[in-house]
Length: 151
Image (cartoon, rainbow, N blue to C red; front, side, top):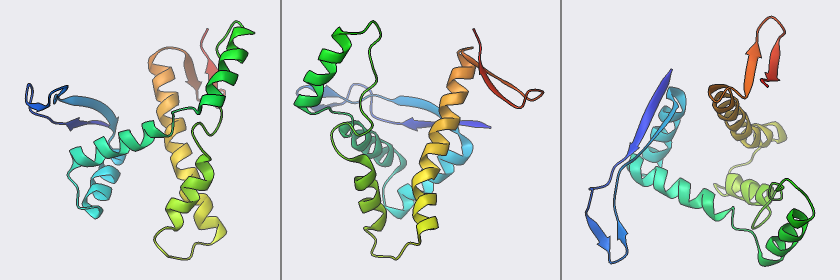
């Protein structure tokens, strides 16, 4: 069911004066690894290049703008729990995703666009639920037909 993906580097190989390459491993569902491999092949990239590129692209979307940071700091100082960042930190994520999907010049029907956009949330929800279950924070009950917090 689970597989792992390894992003290799040569341990100790100096790339520049301030960075060193090393190996990173993560465990993902086997179907996701197959999807990543296929996408990497489409882009003529190695699996390592693909994962590095996607991680860096994803991280760039989580850099809050200065005004958002100041606003967030003000909100956090007024509450006991820190709040999660806005839905579109560093930009308008939905617009960016739609632009990316339509960048290939093909025509997409509404349902096709919706499927492209929601596929990612389904995968993220599955991964999140699996992580929460492995941390004993959430449990699934087939008898009750759903998930519940495990307190």
